[in-house]
Length: 116
Length: 116
DNA sequence: ACAACTGGTTTATATAACAAACCATAATCC
DNA sequence: GGATTATGGTTTGTTATATAAACCAGTTGT
Image (cartoon, chains in turn blue, cyan, brown, red):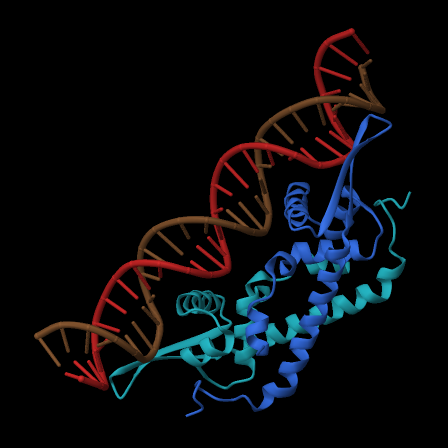
């Protein structure tokens, strides 16, 4: 596909900054606690909670809500294999698109679609 | 700043896929016609129009609406110097963040904030 | 004259992001 | 032992956003 079109059509579930941060962070951990993830990303709890829900619905992460010693609530998150593949793929595509544009972009100084 | 925080706080005016595509395309042209930009990015007219308005309000692009031979309406767009700097900076930051995470991310497999 | 096309803009809607308020339990203080 | 604060989040509400669909003025074709 043309690089600019590909760029314009990037998956926004993954591309959104907060979620890209979450997913990339999770790619580097086997398991992350909610509060750890909050500190890493700097997001508010409410915000993080919403983004996690969205990512879980998309099948990119798995959320486990449990209690420590049957008392203290604790939410742990891990990335799914699909999630991991999706983030890696996203970063690779970003890089590839940017590279493609850098190479061919120099001689694309046309003002209209027909090249008139 | 910590790379995950920086990632989560990226400027969304620039980062949004359609606008990143528009800005990156404009960086490679001295001037672009509306329809040319539409073909490059694959966006609908209405959608493109809205994104352009937003980018203009942000001072990243300049829009010139005029008539060809006093008859045919034509909208041409060029990127401002601030806009050009902002997109280049955005791509550079994305790359730098990704690189930083790749380097230090390997040993960040901690489950909680305190490193307990 | 009427239909269809150009080159867009405006409007409407559905979704999104985010902050603020909330809630249950637990530990702390007096 | 009652109130107070802290922990670990979730729910709710507001505002902004992205997108499609409808529209519009002018022009060209028949």
